[in-house]
Length: 517
Image (cartoon, rainbow, N blue to C red; front, side, top):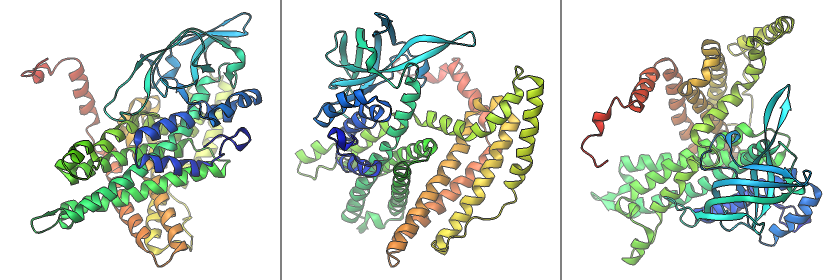
């Protein structure tokens, strides 16, 4: 789907590719994961972005004809910190070849892949007298001697995926199989994963839509206490919030995909926020769907079918979507990544000033430059002209856009004040950062929902339902954002952290009595 037409592919845009993934994901998460691991992060994606003409000519037509690819990064002892990887690639024969040694874990498609992109450490580079770790990306073919499939993994959900532990023992790879160049592997991996993150929201949104259909049908059909269960307020509330949340997920997905297709934009933040927002929302929707269907939600589709009922896979959706909070960067890592990206413009100005190695003359110059910037920037987060002038937006949506604008300025100044308060210790205050990221992600989702509703309303002015869904989502999200701002001032972060440390140190072992250990 994503391979250019000149190499025999379909040349899909990000939007059309995500549409195809969404269609598949609405029926089978395992097949969607196979496709995504192959095309979103597997060999075709980095090759399309960074491959040489020779590499593209050799490999892309193979994928167009049905070859399967995989992306090998994670290792048994290395997860979210790939710079610590142990797999090595040692140059031999005057650097014409590299011998790859190591193991890769949880490599989706790894057990069936014909061609893989493998990340490995190459000899370090000396920079200013110090060794700098070099991570390089290699194209590895399954028939290369020394490549071995050690184990096929089995998981809570996604029972159909081909995921495993792979071993590389003196796998001889020619230098022509290096993608993008020596030492570019980690950067390549981050860019590739960034693209892969845009596929996850599409799959999650499709699952949410299918869950919504399942829940709606059951709420209308199942009668308890003289009325369909959907007419009881507790269940009706769930259905309402599932609907509004699904609309917001849809909006975030297509806004992010559209930014990629438009080109010229750095979408790292948008991709990370889309992944974080949609995966966590999908998990809540899947959980609510099981709850609404009760015992039939917990029962497997096969069991339902065997006793003559419609085989609705609500419990499979719940199991399958849980992994989305882990793959392509866990929710916790996403929050740290987003926080660092948000702080980066400030850090580039401030940290060199605090660095004792910075020469005094240069430090004074940087202080003057920083003062010249912040003397206007910080007051500008308090006093500003509203940019909310669009005549295409209804009055219902305008009030939410005004909230987004004021809350964004508040977020900017509070984040800056937190940096001033905690300085280099802010990175360790992960609860503080998480709340800031939650606010920013919710503001992004609100923006997408309002934009999507305004677009649909402009196309069909008589259809008010998109505006209603956006309105409900924004109303509830505003309450959540206000709560997050309040919790930055009133919280139990220190006590929570202390209790966590006490547990790790074994001070609550009495709590573990009365169980089989």
